[in-house]
Length: 161
Ligand code: PNS
Image 1 (cartoon, helix red, strand yellow):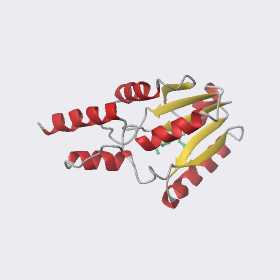
Image 2: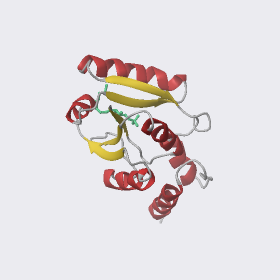
Image 3: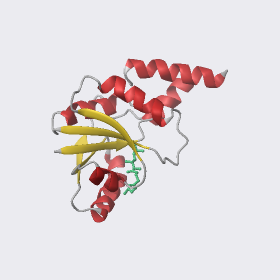
């Protein structure tokens, strides 16, 4: 069974990594897929995000990193995936996730969305908050993988020069 774990991953957090770790044990293959045609202005390019992801998932032989354009269900079909994996941190995530899952099912009923609850140690982490905290001089140790922390620090410091 092939599963797609889609998202922006700008940048990957320890919450994402926890889901990848657990998801890698459930599926034969897990493809972490970054959306290319993002409307939000990202901090890192898709290539930079892929590089960071590849660095931290290299320990999982059945995890692949990729990017996609267009509809997620079309990408999943093209990759012969039958599952979309998404994480839910709190009830506030559920509302939007339910809408996306039902819409994706309408677009392609052969693809099932599977939700995993965030690990309790990570349920308050988001890429948006991590970026805000580091840009305001706060401590993000333990929130993102260490290579990502270093790159975030570089990017934020350079953008302030
Ligand atoms: O990490 P995010 O930003 O919550 O991820 C959102 C993502 C990439 C999963 C979602 O925006 C998506 O699937 N976009 C692809 C376009 C698409 O298929 N839209 C219809 C979804 S119902």
